[in-house]
Image: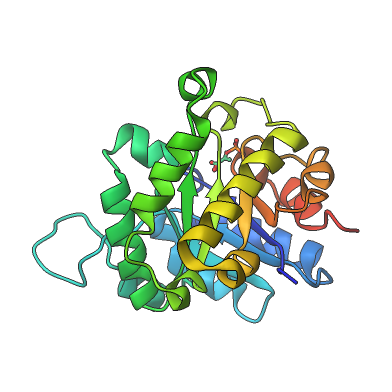
Length: 251
Ligand code: PEP
């Protein structure tokens, strides 16, 4: 019912040459993969060349962030319509590294996601608790606040252009994956919350990805959970063979 999404977040890695080289290696490894949406998110400077390299393939392109204004005196920012112009169909918004290092808040996530959707992009909205929040039993409170703030004012139509990524901060880049049950528990909570906010059919249709040290050897277990509809992958998305193995989780 929900097409799985496997998205690779390349963070601040890869030159243009390395990024195009990687997708040229990846394409044949996933050419036969059906029933899965595959997405890669290179740095801004590589987007357009990677878009050219991906042309005609079954791999889509995401940016790692955007701004909410269309244009103006906003030095250093990139507008959603420029991402579309560069060849993107998706954009990651509110990644925990942006929240931690660059002052991203639920309010800026909300503005960015709305602007991205208005420009025709699919917004991959990230939420997740820190280790201290989990240990203080605040996981559900934190996730609820992030979703209510990040998706404030959203309509059902906007949710159709939204993917949620649940990424426990303690599992990102640490090698510590949430167990299948721990992840499923939060995914089910997110889907129930979305049902109360937007109605059951919106909640049934939305894809909720898990992120946090996803690797070829743990993806199957995660993907076997009822409410896990894909993965947002950092480290293991940087090499074509490991990312392809994750995208081919069902094979
Ligand atoms: C991420 O950057 O979104 C991520 C989940 O990273 P990693 O897979 O390396 O934990």
